[in-house]
Length: 171
Image (cartoon, rainbow, N blue to C red; front, top):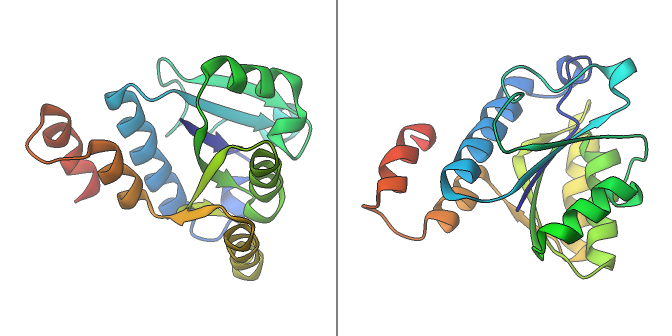
């Protein structure tokens, strides 16, 4: 399943490479929906940080959950929704890498989820924080992947209708 963490209106402009992060998150989101992969998006304190950026908001079938904890797993609605979906592999993207993404991934790993963090769809305010997140999670057992790695693994083979639909997104 795909989890996109806190890609919100007041948070995105402060990040490193926000256009890249949004573009790649959009590719992941579109690919997940095309392939029937469940998606959860979170919003950290939307009264203060705004809602999900328009480029990602409003996608039918996406579950959007508000939260206050930095680790999504500490939020009962999130953890219950994740358990109800019954998936043990989680693709994570979002912001901030060194806060909510790292804490969520660490909690998921503790609870025996197989976690993959999409490095080119994850951001922090500083490059150092982003790199520290990736290094920590890699050492903790999370897979570090890119958007294209995820999409091509989800597709599995060329020539399918889904491949033809998604190819323009990854070219």
